[in-house]
Length: 141
Picture 1: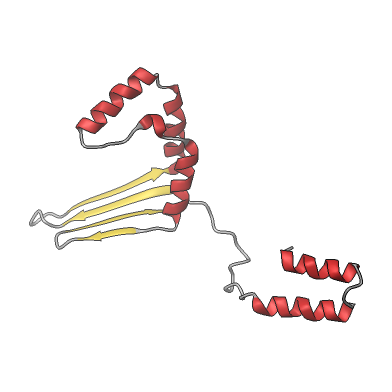
Picture 2: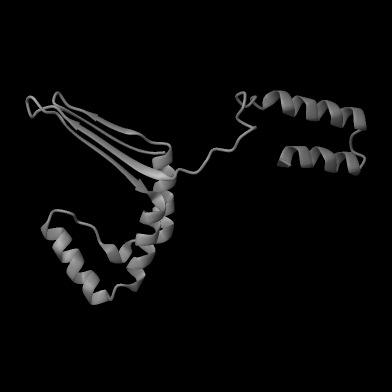
């Protein structure tokens, strides 16, 4: 129950307004609220299960290369949880090697809550990169 409706009912209970007035106020509140799109209330949106990465490279001349990777999000979640089992010295070395390779990620700062937030934002996002010779798509499904 929203706050405005609760206030109307409290005023009715305290005798500040009549039942007819409360009914008119509640009707006015319902008219102000936008109607949900058809079918939106019927089914909640399903959580994504996969991170999909599609790459098409047509710059190779005759043979176009194509990459289609579908990573289960459960695997990503498990991987983040497993980082807590890696000794801090190993994480330091791993971070240094990743940085040398051009991947500046600090694995000691990676937390499961952050992954869930990232997945939530990816669910609503599709990244499309179009180049004259290639196409890249990243999305959740």
